[in-house]
Image 1 (cartoon, rainbow, N blue to C red):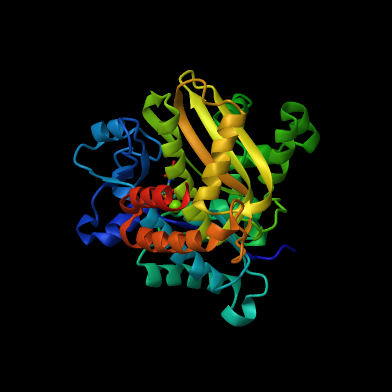
Image 2 (image 1 turned 90 degrees about the vertical axis):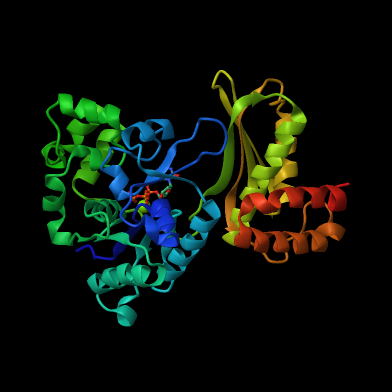
Length: 395
Ligand code: TTP
Ligand code: MG
């Protein structure tokens, strides 16, 4: 019999909830948080549950949200602040077990194996996790407890916000039966339509089909449907390198052609990537760049290095080299992105790829900048850092 050991936790309306936490006057108000960075291309990052009543959801253009809810409170994103709360969230999770898999800024899986002597039954631990998050952050999370990741993820979503849903091993098939097929991983709008055409709307309908039949109908996706519809999922909670990559990108309101301007943006993006790497104590040995042109053609190029990198200057220089070698700047650029993958814990005494003598000085500078970023947010110190680097280190 499968054990009831996997927890999925997801914070409720995360960015909006943090905004309410920092400004209690917003409590009970429809709050919409969105990237209003450059031009009119802003989209909703998230909306409070009050705002969702108006039909607003993530990825909706802000302009459309404003039509649906003109009296809503529209706020720009404050990524550094959310990152801060996220860190607190993960340290709470880590206080229960080291077996935590980070899925995103506000979402994780935990494997409770080995926790019971310290914290009680799985049910008790799931409850404690939920309560501790609420007590220590002032925010609510929704929690699912189930025998595997697939079920725990569905469970945490069922009673949002502030829900706790437990799916015991003996209840699995019944739990899945009446759920819409769209809840299954890998079932997007297209496959959902195909299934509907066959009269399949609920997960229970899939349970009636044999493995052979589903394979004939949908190939590999069909095989997946067979197992998931029965609640079978053997994936482990993956604690190693659970963040696969860290990247940032920017879409410009006007396409950019001037190399200097592109490199300036690249530096800012590299700064952000580096900051996030170091806030998570990570470095990575693959750097990648992404470029999109006016015709929406998008290219990604990567390079794998012998050593891991995390410093802004390193990430920037390698990104710049990738853009040059691959001749990616021959046309005006609509979107530019840079990231680092193949991540591993940061070695504190990591060698600087470029120049050992500058290493210490650069590290000191990076630490000061990190402190300032934590205190005052990103934009305020970015310029200063670029000036410092130009005057001081990058000649
Ligand atoms: P989610 O957990 O998907 O959403 P949420 O926490 O806002 O709401 P829910 O209660 O349904 O979990 O994402 C976490 C945060 O990630 C969200 O607060 C904002 C950000 N985000 C984006 O910036 N863009 C997106 O498209 C999505 C889905 C999320
Ligand atoms: Mg969430």
